[in-house]
Amino acid sequence: MKAEKFFIGIKALVKNNRNQILILKSGPLELKSTKRSEEFWDLPGGKSMKGESVEETLRREVSEELGIDGKKLEILNIFDASISNFRTSHGKKIPLMLITFLCRLQQENNFKLSLEHEEYKWGSIKEAKKLLSDKFNKAFIDKLDI
Image (tube, rainbow, N blue to C red; front, top):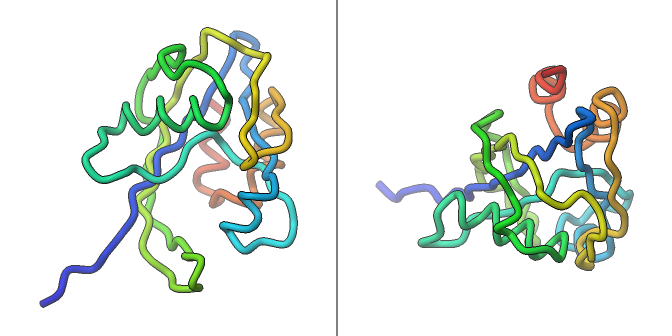
């Protein structure tokens, strides 16, 4: 029996002292890689690379996407874990184990976004729930009331 391939995705749910969530608006590279035609909002993060720990993935992705030192990310605890399908650039659907961690940043602005994202904002819980609902499932969105 052949083992099925799957991806592990790691996201950072970054909250600040004002109980706001850091959200990122998709940019040209993100739209191309996800084959979406309309912009969407997301959390920092991405797929784990072979041999990389969860912490290494989170810090690498935050560093790449926000242009800051990944060591400025404080990883608090697991917020959510779910399984969904990830659509590859070839259109094939592959299972995705998505793990989201509650985090804090020592730096809250002066980000230098990668081409994956064109804008960031610190949104209220209500705003984040609305903007992230295009990307995340209802169970995840409902948990944001923490």
